[in-house]
Image 1: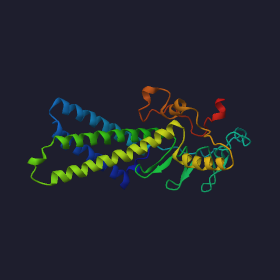
Image 2: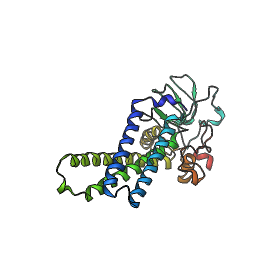
Image 3: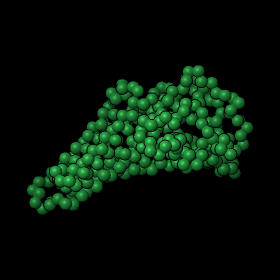
Image 4: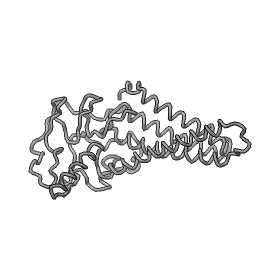
Length: 276
């Protein structure tokens, strides 16, 4: 783990926003709606606090975990690279060299211009975590997006519920109305943005693809259709298998960000023809 990644303006902005959302949701809207001293209000405060802490923990794991480095001694096994495979015809399966590092790259590995190194199973570089999302922290990133989406929706429900319950006729100032509108818009925007990102990564997870590979697959499918052929993602092993490759075989540990004992070296990956 590298604590220096926390010293970043985007990371600080995320923490500041999470703190603001938590504070106004619990101590303003939830207190105004149900009251923090009531049993229902206290229960909602505990649930929302637990969800925010879970999201915060996932965020720190995603920021501080190295996504995966290529071993200095890595040399591809040419015999395992079936260049005559007529079913897949994927360039990613062939031995590749990084144009920047001048070293061999394992399958699904890409060079990050921001981190200035090759990252194993690179998904993308996330500016908000000041880190690449790759082999070792993709699970934490997925859980982060999931928990952040649930937290945003939860906060939006609390804001809307509080707004409907409030007696606006007795409110003499316009500031509370403006505050409700601003916060409600913020919660709704976060819910839509994070929800869209979650749906995107659920699709990628279920198809065993990365963000980079999804763009490459779009182009490969277009070229295949142009030549009268069909494209198939060579790493797609089926829905359940794809999910367990990232979240792990034990369903009880699926939602724990640091439960990555099922991951191997990030250098070799099973492909469709291996399961036949």
